[in-house]
Length: 67
Image (cartoon, rainbow, N blue to C red; front, side):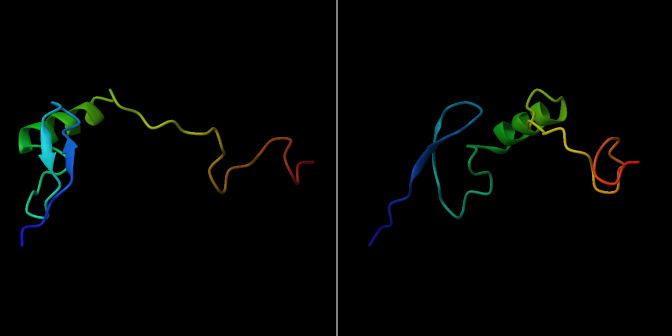
């Protein structure tokens, strides 16, 4: 019996990719597309939005415990 695998789209080039355990590059179609994506993150083309919350241990002026 053959197993059907889900087909996803490569986020870099748009080529269809079967989501198989043997594919070391998933969700990408190739190492090239995987490295292109990594380069986009490294050059900050992609960014994850951050909330402006103080890091733990920083003093909050006017916050709780302020004199």
